Figure 1 (cartoon, helix red, strand yellow):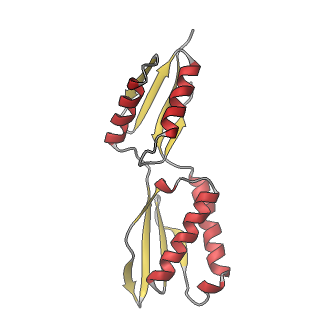
Figure 2 (tube, helix red, strand yellow):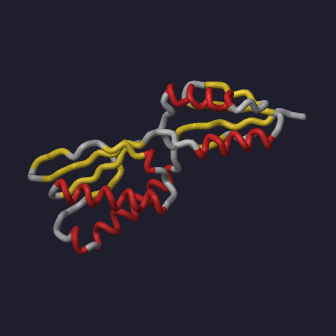
Figure 3 (cartoon, helix red, strand yellow):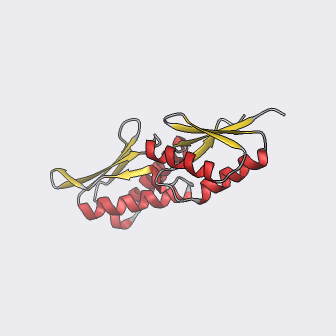
Length: 163
């Protein structure tokens, strides 16, 4: 019987985040409470989002709209690392949101330790930015996936590279 495996990585679906940003920008443009605030929600580089408005409370309200759209698009809020609001000149306020794209080393170690503690016949391997879990039984691998999913980890985890 051949050995099967999968990888546990930190990440998100970029297309879904893009859709959430576009939906949030469209809603902010049409809502009455954002009228004449010139609020902007857009990509800022490869892994960042810029929210800018006339005041800090309007920028925070735009952030809540973005979070709501992310939840509806099934993007984990753990993928959003929100910075404090800051003044950018002209009385405008800006909030920078970076997207979590890598798994912290301590989280990878924790996952390996948790998998070993289950006493199932699987082999976890820490590969730096991801953890590969291999085993002969697909039932064991599915049980490990369920165990990892039900724990509350500080990063958005996804399962990839099924073999």
